[in-house]
Length: 375
Image (cartoon, rainbow, N blue to C red; front, side, top):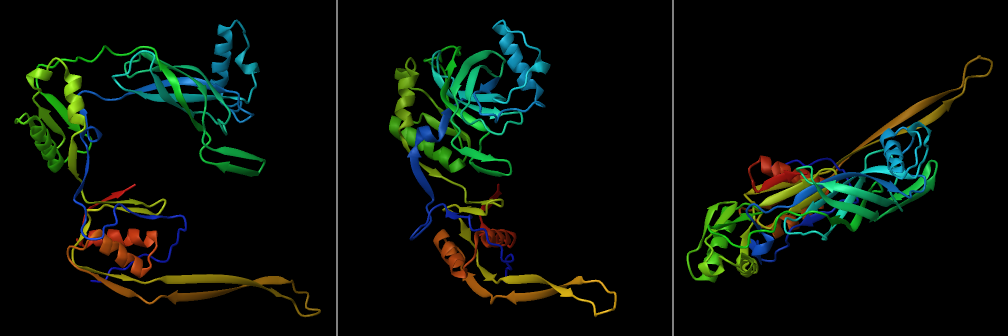
C-alpha cells in the first residue's frame, strides 16, 4: 500500500510534539490523584460577567464612532454631578470592556478572583489602563463581585503610522485578584444522608472502575461502584456522615491509574501535531516524495527599429522548473508503537504539514487505531 503525502509545504515555526516518547512499550495510563480527575456532583464553577470602562490609555482607546464607551463615560460623570452632553465628548483614553471571571461555590464574601477585561470597541490597546469598578453578575443576574484595578497585558506595542511593532494580544487584559466577592451562596451542607457521587472530568469506563476499586480498597468495604463512564457512587460511612469534608479530603489523595483514549490532535493552522502514547498502527507502508514547481518570470525590454515609429514594450519571459524528489518507502508492522512511528517519520524527513497528511491518510486506510481531533 502506497500513501502519497502532500507537496512540499514548510512552516518553520511548526512543532512536532509527541505526547510521550517511549523506549519500550506505550504507556496505557498514568497515575494521578483522585482530586485531579473528579469533582463532586452538583458542584461547578459559576461564570460572572460585567460591563465596564478601562481608563488611562495613551490615545489607544475607543474612537469617536464607538458610541457606547462615550455614553458610559458621560453616565459615570453624571453620578459625580458633572453633566456633559455625550455628543460633545471626544476622548481617546477610555475603552469599553466586558469583564469575566469564574467563582467557586465554596468561595465566601471577601474572597478575591482573577478578572479578565476584553475590549468590545475599536480600541487598539489596553496597555497601561486601569479597570474602573465593575459589577459582576452571576447567571441569575444577581450582583456577585466587584472588579477593579490595573490591567496586566503581557505584551507591548509601539510605533507610528504604518510602522509599528506589537507583541502578544493587546486588547485583552487580566486583573489578578481584582474581583472581590460581594455575595456568596449559602454554605455547603457538611452532612449527607445518601450516597455521594463523583463526576469524572474525562468520562471513561476503565478509569471509573479503577476509581471505585481504589476507594473500596482504601475503605475496606464495598462502598463505591461505577454508575457509568462519567460517575462513581460512594456510600459515605456512618462515622463521616456529619463531617463530609474530612471524608472527601481522605479520598482526594488516593492515587488512580487513569486510562486515556488513543488520540492524535492536529492543528492545521499552526502545523502542530500531538500524538498520544496509546496510538497503535496496523500493517501499512508510507511513501514520501516531494514535488517542487518553480515559476520564474523575467521581463525583457523590446526596442523598436530605428525610424519605424514603434513603441518600447516589456515582454515577460517565463520559465517553469519541475523537480520531484526520490520517494522513500517505510514499512510499519502491525502493533507499531509511538516511538516507531516517530522514528519512521523522522527517517522520511517529513515536516509537520506532511505528518498531518500522512496521519489522515493512515486513518482513512484503517491502519491508524486512534481518534483524530482537528483543532
